[in-house]
Length: 231
Length: 399
Image: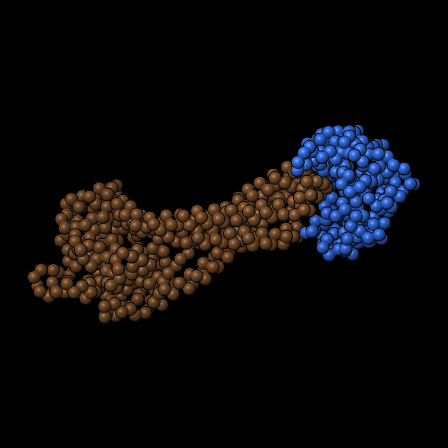
């Protein structure tokens, strides 16, 4: 059973060294709570730190200060190995540039999510195939990423993100490299994910990403400010 | 499993090719070094197995019997020295007297053996025959030839060989030993004495003058001397030198040392070449493997995002590196062997063999490449896992 609050972040601070002068503070005490079944959209101008926020929330990068909790467990202070295991257990990622592995087929890319967590068994294969079917790329299962269009690659990446049915989906500009039709399809899938009870955080500059969101935040000066919700 | 391995190998095709070239270089140079080492070791084993005695002074004698005449009386005196077990008179002549003596290691020699006396050499009781037979007591104008000599002249048992105007029947070809006997023509000592007289104008003149009382059995350029069990060969050799006049006695350990000194340049050259091959080939291999791992830094970042731990990635990278270096190493070994055999096939026409691919060399090259590949992969893996997944993805995407 999923906890009510899937992820919470308190006082996140992240600085990057500047070529000269003081470090650049990208996150300056950002706070966020996302409950199950919620779709949260984070907006902000380019370079405002949206991707950094998502990386910190997804334990892909350490914050300089602040805590990230999955459920009631503080995970941001865990060691490297434990963080890896928590990522595998809790998270699914959808990246702007898809980040499919070029040497693997579409099916193997989807199954990659299981390789380091549950292991690849017949059940996972069936589920991976069902997902590829559902997102209209089953016929491309033996194709390598270079043989797929951008929309197809993102659909494969989405299948990979949800294969393990993770409690939290993090999507970094998931429609950034897609045309309108494919972009809309991915956003619909993210909304559906939230409707099914998962928590979803989407970072996007696309106006229609906020449609149907439960909460919209704007990242400004390193802080998350709640914006009006268009439900 | 096999599909995954095939996938890995396909993805690393250029890496495997790079490793193969590095390993091929190491193996080829190593095989040349092995060839020289075998030559030196073979010579060493031979000279350490007997005490070599020659007549004092200058003469026609070649090889370790270089010196003057060793008459039968001197041989008889040697037999009586305490600790001596057997003496085999020998005649060693350069096949072509015009050949300069400074290349005696690769010189073609006519070796006349007294077949009535067993070989006293402890490390070389018989010369191994590859085809045909060895000489027997009573044989005349028959020859057993070394492998290189046979190859360079396309001779086999049954062939005829012309030596100093006399026809000889080749009755046997020795196994390739990669040392001096490969270039020997072994004949009965009586035949060798005939050749000596025929070759040496001074000797002919002396014999014709009748001024010196020489019998056929006095025409020896040297003798191989054996020692009794429990005797120190160096002590026996010194005893011969002290008790028998007019002889040059080679102390086995001194001769061995002399042989090593004379081949020291080649040994040093090969050690240098070998080290250079190991350093260059090793660096190239390590660099290729590490570069191949770093090239996939983004993939490793993605895998960590998907839940892979350091252990997962380390195992994966190491497994792939071993598969890749083993494949590249095996391919490199095959490449070097094919190249070596090709070159040897070409130079064999002149009786040469440049490469010796010993199991220790091939196994060593494979183990070396795998260890180095694993070390390079481990280094790259350590560097990668220290990065955050986001940083790995960023760097991989920027590359």
